[in-house]
Image (cartoon, rainbow, N blue to C red; front, top):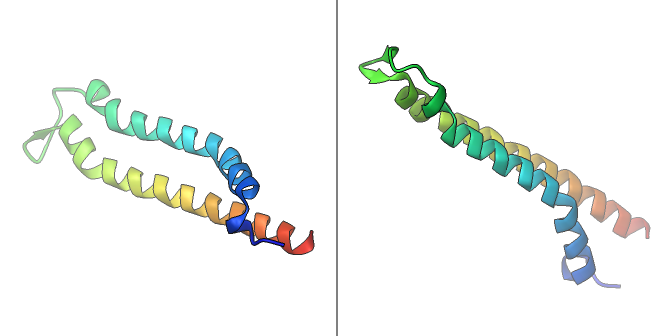
Length: 89
């Protein structure tokens, strides 16, 4: 019997299972990237820059790291589940 990494059907089912998560995280990325500049008040300045610039420069990268961490965690869980199913079956 082939390993899960060599089985095209297993790979396809893995990506089908991960697709909703990837779509939600892509939506979260778009919100983090494009919404703060529109919502940040122009009157607030932080260290000489507008609030939108500060939010984008400081909180954006942190949010991106969290998004990547969430995807990695869920992908590892899906891989472990698939490997357990492969060993049993």
